[in-house]
Amino acid sequence: MAELRGRLVENEPMAGHVSWRTGGPVARAYFPADLADLAEFLTRLRPDEPLLCVGLGSNLLVRDGGFDGTMVFTHGALNVQRQETNGTLYVEAGVASPKVARYAASLNLVGAEFLAGIPGTMGGALAMNAGCHGGETWQCVDRALMLTRRGALVERQPEEFSIGYRHVGLKRATDEIFAGAWLRLTSGDGAAARARIAELLDKRMASQPLDLPNAGSVFRNPPGDHAARLIEAAGLKGEEIDGARVSEKHSNFIVNPGGKASAAAIERLIGRVQAEVRQRFGVELMREVRIVGEAA
Image 1: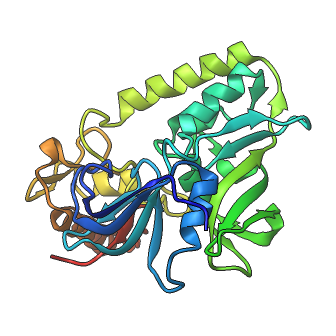
Image 2: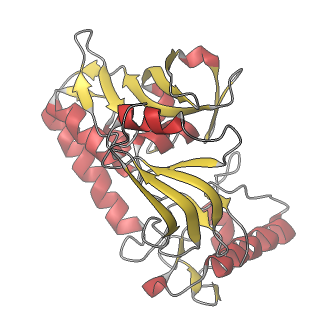
């Protein structure tokens, strides 16, 4: 076996790794050196070991009792991005989405500007078909690079996935994780792309509570409507449970001022919002955020 070059930590507190700044510990946390090191690490896991990849933790809540499994942290490790000879942009899963947008613009490639508004890494964007401002991740994907639990790298075409609104899944394989992707973008005006990125970031700053711990949009938009509109119409702006609060600035955000709320408080508030919107409007709000682990 090759020697592992990453760092393995037991009982790693998750509050420092998720954007909500709360949550219980993970039993085993692995910080790989790079993609090859991660592939080697996966070969050493038990086949039934619970495994979760984490980028910037911007779409994740770990319950206070923690996660009894292994989490792999890709940000800062799977960070390669380059332009290939065929014009595609190769991006590994740990690269922050806004960084991809800026890199594409620097190469005079257009079509990735919307990624500047996604507060996560490309791995998460690929896994949930993240999108905003009229763009979605899989509109740009030429092909994906997957990593199996046996440490093998496999290239997959878009038609091998079921791709929907905020959901992506392989049609046949189940044990693969996103290692990266090749993006097919269009040659264009890089200066205009950079201006569009700045505009989107300004809009995000103006409309979202970025000064407080949050996990981005908590709920998917239901067909033909917006979750934020329903939550506000239900009178839930500012609703609070034990420090967790529905943002007054954007009602599809739940904030955790000072990081004082527990994961349980945030989860209870999510349930409260769902129940109230269901009762008032007959609409079932579906979570965008992922909740894992055990209650304390």
